[in-house]
Image (tube, rainbow, N blue to C red):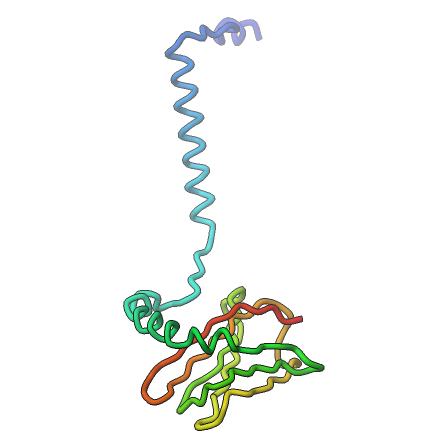
Length: 156
């Protein structure tokens, strides 16, 4: 026991070299800890093919500009057990209404086609939807001109 005490010095000299070495060791331990934690995080992309969609985004911007007046007049309300969507003045040739759930990767999106040649006045059964946040995406074409409306909604 006495031999062990003589080998290990009891009072370490805390000069600048010792302090610098301890600081470097602590910093490297911190960096290795961060690297380990980041490798354990899973990366979930909302869109798998985000690059081609990013290039085609100008078309979407044009559709949003075309739909500004319709977006101001859009009516979306919950009544009884129905979700009612009405866009006065819009008579699409083709299109779709999508209820997109962004918080779950494998969540099922609800896609409803728009009736051709009729006004957008739709009702959806509330029982099909889970409680939470949805992104309502409405895309339609009228006389070869595209329109797009996107609105975040919360369904109870």
